[in-house]
Length: 134
Image (cartoon, rainbow, N blue to C red; front, top):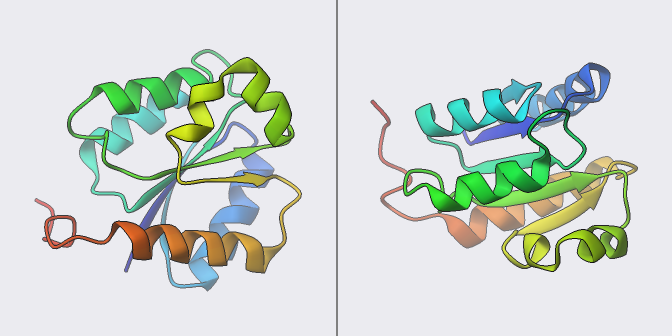
C-alpha cells in the first residue's frame, strides 16, 4: 500500500482528503504542521507528500526547502496543494513549483487528485523505494 503524507493545518480538509485517499487504498499520514510533517517525512518511507503552502509557523514554502536540503527526504515527490492559483504561487517563489511533481488547487475534483497521485507514484517508483522500511 502506497503512503501519502499530507501536511495541512485545516483539520476538516485534512480529514476529507485522508478519507478520500483511504478509499483509493492509500495509507495516509496526516500532519497539522510543517514541523510535524518534516519529522514524519524523516521517519517514514513516504511515496508522495502533499503540502499546503499556507501553514502557520513554518509555511509550506519553507517546508519544501527543508525537504530538499535533507538527503533522507529530497527524493520524495511533493505535490503542492493550495487555495491560491498557480500564478500567485509562482509570483512568491518561482522555484517552488519547478521542483514539485504537481500542483492542485484545494477546489480539486476527486478524480483529479487520485489521477495526479497515481501519475506521480508511477513516475517515481524505484526498487530502492519499494524495500521494506525498518
